[in-house]
Length: 307
Image (tube, rainbow, N blue to C red; front, side, top):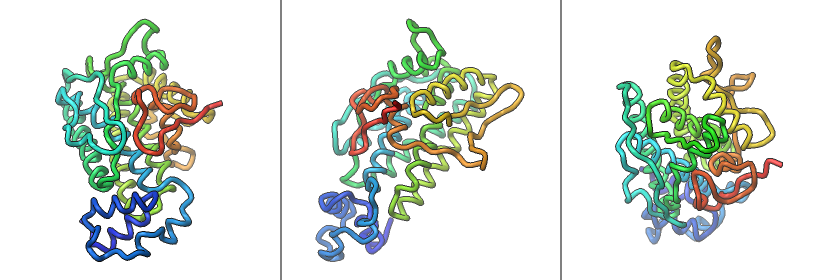
């Protein structure tokens, strides 16, 4: 897909350390090819100036989120998770708790779900291919108790009730809304941290697709009069990810808010730690919980402390 010169530059600028660079070279088929000298294996000037997490760490963090979305939509559409060949990698490999096929009554929603499922699986394939042997494994994912906890936190159900996002179309749409907007803000927040232009362009492309997905879910929720439920979920996300009141519902019956932006018409961002607050379903600084009961794989794994 890439020429050797571009691939070498991408590897040098993206990997966390020399070991990472060598893994990238091996996965790209460049190790021992005579195209990389000793200086190429060292840290490039651009990478040396980059103080934040490496591009590899950022992409692996994104891969964890894509695993979650791919599993959710795959189960909803097909009744089973993603292929086992897409679950290997570095770190602790885990399965999926919960999840089953949704009995879609609406042809349009069924088609939306199928298209989104395909996109999310493609994102998993792309990131795994781009990261090569540096990719992280599929972590343990909870699609059962996590949704009940999220629904209880939002006040959609009582403390003794359960919420199954696969039970019907309405539950499916609300379940998708719980984390669909989060993916958009995650990629937006990661954009300034990505050092390599090639990875930045790819991340921008994925962000655009995630925004399309979020818009579909928000629009269908609005058309079905689920503004109150969406606002409750939005408030719950806001209660988890920090002191700032940034999250937005889909509006009221008199005024739609299908595109959540600031006063300049720009989508807001979340840090990786804030994203994990929502994924782990806690405002505290932890390394596991919620949708990822054993945590995510990779160096970026701790949520923020709201206090």
